[in-house]
Length: 115
Image (cartoon, rainbow, N blue to C red; front, side, top):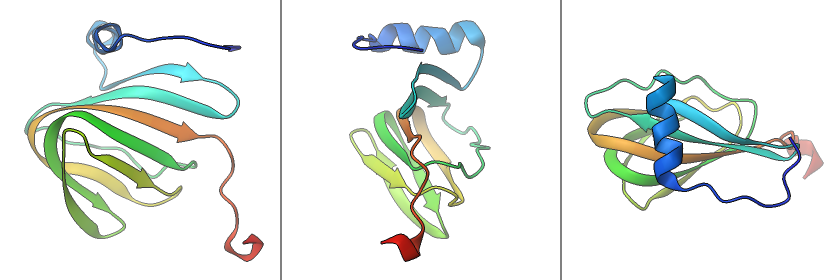
């Protein structure tokens, strides 16, 4: 996909999840990154597995606990979360419906000995 510029209204992205009956809708996929809207209902279960790319979450709305690499954190509307590639992570004890913007880097993570 070759995109130089685009705008995605939130209402349209969320409606795509409903149409596809899916928890997420990927709306951007270019060489350097991808992005999606991810939704989890209150009381729902997040079944994601570790990813091959660094990831950034922005919580548009909702409230839950977030577990990453054995550490738990309260998260809610307005919070931003960074997760390094390959780390086990997930949302749990979802108190309020979650709408989350997720951005994945497509640059391979650097090895520690390269730093």
